Length: 93
Image (tube, rainbow, N blue to C red; front, side):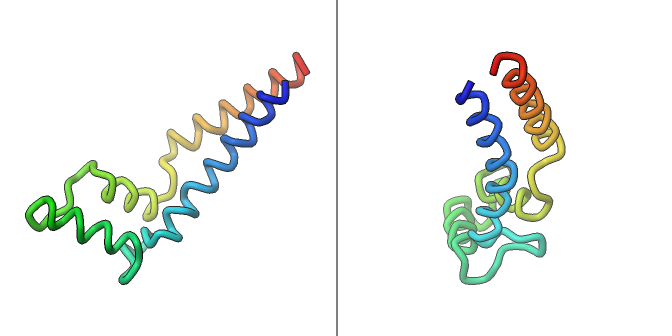
């Protein structure tokens, strides 16, 4: 049952850690931070795409997470999965 507990902890860390890591990289709620890793990624993506950043690409997705956090559906699924894993641990632990 340690694996269930580990999975639940991992889900919680991911739900908090992903937005934090994205923010540290420079993808913020107000846009991409000048001089950051995010700015370098955006520049590279824009050059590769002829001047624009592709919708749905990595840079666009990370900026969405930086601006709004983890989408509600992902957050809800993570919470529900954690609850199920916690219940299974109580039943089988």
